[in-house]
Length: 129
Length: 359
Image (cartoon, rainbow over the protein chains, first blue to last red):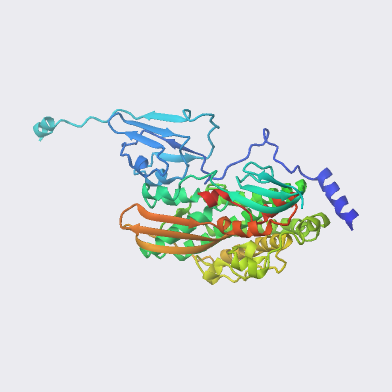
């Protein structure tokens, strides 16, 4: 009985598929829902500060005056809350994880938005009317 | 009587990554006493509720622990929902039970691997963790995270799982059950395992009850107590009986956990079969005002969540009583009289999670 079990295992190990993934050749595929890292597209961003307000870890900072969005990857939990609250759908979670970092000053992402569209001056609006 | 020596066990010990620290009082090779000390991974998460919005806290509470993460999140949102009188949709209740049972399977497989590693059975350890990987893949596919899922929100769930995916997961789990079978046989019958586990760390039914043991530690002594029987989430509509053993030793605790893996797989099958259609979240308005205490069954035993809101968006108080905290006392009770070499095994049979205990 024991011999059968051992024999089966030996045959399986000799002729079966490898138990581990052949990593560098075959890359592991992520699932569509995998939360790897937070990314931001500044094209539509209105710098409303909602993501920074709702972030449980305080990883996001937004400056409306300077039109700058900053993320500290060392603090980010990748919980997806900011992605859900963003009114303009600028935020998304990418499937690929970020590279490991060695100290807390690394991983700061600073994204500057395009300059704000200029508001027509009140006098010009009145004149047009 | 031999000379007494004090040997520190942990906080860094090869047998388990958790910073459990015990000062063992030894007479020759026999343990005569043990003094625990904790405080190595305290993060002050309970205090954080005073500074973070109650909705954001659902993500933070889940990070109390990396193994029972889903049930921590569930316990928190369940408490807040009870304070705010929110009825969640049926599908959300079933999905919560589904993920809760999946995390039980992964936690018990992780524990079985660590246990095998503790008595030097390396290949069994690797096989247990190989099977566990499939469960983690299911988590990643359905929630987006392998260990931290972030799917529970107040009023339901952030994500839904469609019925086709659930059916496919059901098929994967049937394969998992087949793969666990030979591993379970080793834990049940292998000579080496029996030699290390049978008769070790005896805890009688009365002692287990009086010392406040919870979870598999309690059920292995013959007390059929399981918080899932309270019927939270979808458990009221699922058929199951608590897995119990009467031995009260390390072997019995192992058997209870092995039995619970099969029970959880069966509960997941029932969840998939009975899964109602519909939405998974309802909108929630206002802030919590009042207090509530909810009890949930974690893989390690019963956890208690207490929340108190004062009508603002910040909670007044939130408290978690984790199962390891309750199980430390029975551990200290079974340690005296055992050999020094058996201490790692005994410490493991309570399935210690110090990150939970210290929060």
